[in-house]
Length: 291
Image 1 (tube, one colour):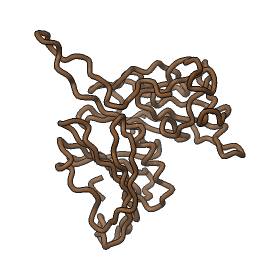
Image 2: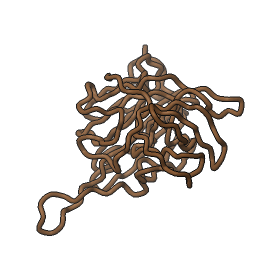
Image 3: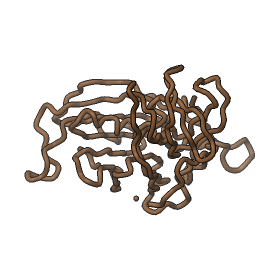
Image 4: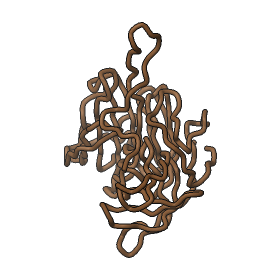
């Protein structure tokens, strides 16, 4: 595939999330103290359990939504909002409701409430936080993964190996990120997804041809699948996310990754005659308090 971290934090802290990220720090992210070593902060906990219906009824949920997630008094989008839970916050699941598309009854340090069960907003796994003003994005990655950086991309992969890896590359335009796909892989499916308010295509490729092993003849064989998202953020920025993997069941790792990614919106000129820039807007489609 293409060129493809820790301080403890309080568990289940409820915090009011800010309305958007900045280029240097991310206000309202409960798991993000300033100047984290190695760009990551470990969120401790264990994956959740499921009841007989298949819905998770115990364990934990980590908030993925970059702009925070509403905590409600009941299992309804019309219920009173008790507060906003920041991205990265770990909540204990104490129940589940099928009402209105599904809700988790969760417990924080001082408050109980309900969050949507939509999987794009939370996950039963534990994560570390990567953020880089130079790279222009922040993201949660699995706590037992690690990352490396080179001029072309940031590469996230399991510490134990396992083959799969997520590459994040940015450039001024899509053309500078290279063509879609990769030699030896054939497009198998295309789906529309949203990445921090930007609509993009998720393309999944399967290996059908000869692919050179990236590490030479003695390295593991090339991966069976490639999932790819390429999109334009604004006229000055484009992003490419590649996920190489063998087992189709691992695709949820990629979904959690891009559901948690965020990038600062472009600065807008200040009012005529005033210095500096006006407050930056949220990206199109992004909402400050999902559900």
